[in-house]
Length: 200
Image (tube, rainbow, N blue to C red):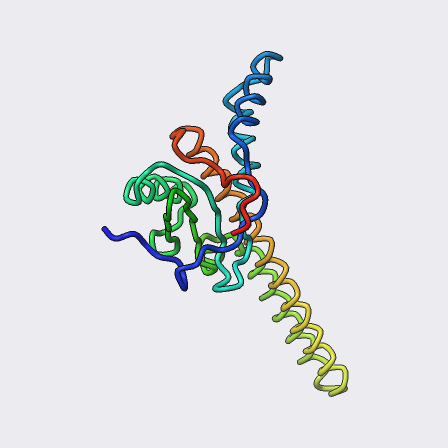
């Protein structure tokens, strides 16, 4: 199976990175003071992958997580596919690109709607549209100006709720994506967050 490619063949720009030496030191220090090393390790991986997160790639609006690995393309894709299954995301909404030991997982923008992450916002927006429309119809019998105002408030309010909800849904999906990749990294020990200082 050929390796999926990201748009225009370019890696999206990640943020700051992660240091393996710091990771090992902090996990060892956590064990010495009686903390659960596995949980500390996952927390550190999560922070590392968060530094390689692009919440909305300007190319196509995708959510992108960066990292490093020694796995080959098919092995990495299979591992990521298992992580995506926990998010109930079908294979068609994410791609994995690997180049010279660095990878990116790209989740399409439509996954926010497909995964139900913005379902509550959609319902609230529809409610605002319907209420604004009904109030507008009531005022239509007495005052066209008030009716127009009610219609306008319904449309504006619904649009605001929908935009805010989609943004929150995107942030929730991104957080869960980072969590899944962090847990995968802890299990595999062959997947790492992006290196510190990487500038794309």
